[in-house]
Amino acid sequence: MLSAAELARVRADFPLLEREVHGKPLVYLDWGATSQKPEIVIDAEQDYYLTRNAAVHRGAHTLAGEATELFEGARAEVARFVGAAPGELVWTSGATAGLNLLAYAMQNATLGSGGEAARPFALGPGDEIVVTELEHHANLVPWQQLAARTGASLRWIPATDSGRLDLSVLPEVVRERTRVVAVTHASNVTGAVTDLAPIVARAHEVGALVVLDACQSVPHLALDLPGLGVDFAVFSGHKMLAPHGVGALYGRRELLEALPPVQTGGSMVEVVTMTETTFLPPPQKFEAGTQPVAEAIGFGAAAQYLGDLGMAGVAAHEHELTERLLAGIVQLPHVRVLGPTEAVDRVGVVSFEVDGVHPHDVGQVLDAEGIAVRVGHHCAQPIHRRLGVASSARASLGIASNTDDVDAFLAALPTVRPFFGLGE
Image 1 (cartoon, helix red, strand yellow):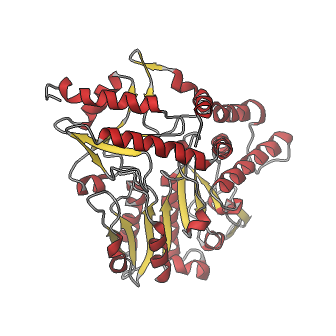
Image 2 (image 1 turned 30 degrees about the vertical axis):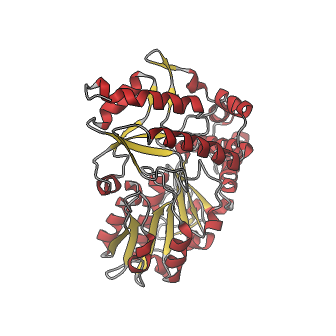
Image 3 (image 1 turned 120 degrees about the horizontal axis):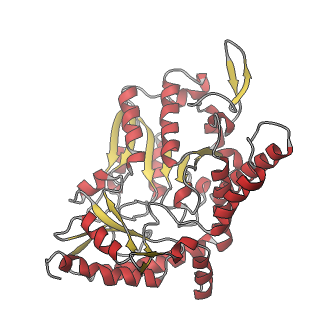
């Protein structure tokens, strides 16, 4: 748990939180979309450009060596943060890129790339890919497309009325021909944290790979990805205090070694002749071309910052704020929370609808009070449809959120309906 003094020091690390919006102090409740950045991350990225800017893994001069050391040091830092080895962490441009990398690599395996070692990744008619009704489009559309390209079938685990997964159907949905199970760790709409153990056990029982979308869990919970038993996982830097344009794909080492590459070119090759090429081992095998060096260094600084705070304390702090937010919002008339209304197995992502008011209008009224929330379908149309709405407004908490933020939101939300003449 963060003490009041610790939280004050944390908030002081985020310069953007000092600004005003429409003459009001900024209340930033959109951490689920993108996190604000502490100065240590901004400084790390700036320092690279000011003092060490060079191409990594190329050249023998001092700057190239220093840049490479920082780049690979950041990989080790981020890998350590999620319990992985550096060789199990591939840099990507974000979680979406990581999921597409996996889907296209499996298509390449289907076409024969990677030889015998890659055959376990090949798909065909009769094979099945399983997703869930809670997925962000980034963990749904690539698998839809892979199924269409390979002839595999797409199945899914449904959501309950409370916005959690209905695991009672697991034996019927994950079957003998299931090859991939792609699942969110924490929903970006309902905030529900998935009970992974039975999913991982069932998937591995039938020989399927488990792909985890950890975007909404890595920044908020203490995680050990290998310990969870998943085979692959993705997460994005910009959601965990790091710059935009960088993310990570975790994969068990033996799987990354067998998985064929998707992008080819410089930096990922071992020997190239005019007729054939051999590839470097992972993670470099999946990192063709120019890498997001400064962004990766910032990512490493963000992981170190959160690690120094202690993720157990971060999780406890955000859990307390989530309890406060939920306890207040469920008391408001004409407001419905989409998802669990108690802070149990839940992160601080709270989507809601206000009766009679479009979510975009809700967002604009709150913005006039300096309160930043997300509006729309949050790149997750199926779960919105399942819960009977087309879109929603969403307040999401982060490490620098405090009780004043929550109380300001709870005080402003009841003004939305009267603003449109709808009563309280």
